[in-house]
Length: 206
Image (tube, rainbow, N blue to C red):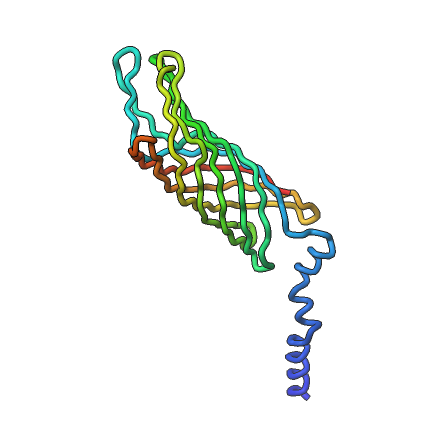
């Protein structure tokens, strides 16, 4: 009798009904009309760690400025590839950092486009991919208004980890996390500036 009961339980767990139960979350998502496509928005700050660009100010002093840092805001889309938590993310953002001083102001601006693969397990999501800086530039104002340099497009690597929270009865989710960026900026004259950065960000998705 015990052997028969054990075999019965094993057969039930491997039956199509048991498999459909294991796929319950995926079926529920499909029934609810959720295609796995979500849009998201993020804001954050990147702290530049790379080479310092020395700038001669109007008062005769010099100041160091590390490009590729500053505040960033972006929009994007993510798509679930499988019920195992794999997804792909694509986004575009604007990033701007500045050196503000009595002798003049200098700013860095770029439009990063990022494509990442990610994995989500519970409330934790980790991802890695590529970041393409479009139209990066350095520009001055006030006494440094004559300083301007258009940089070449640059391709870098980005990694991120974030904590995601959301209500069970809503698609709306919030998140915050940290990221690291490996990138080298290039001048039109062939020079290079190592420009890695680390940052914090927060956002929401729907």
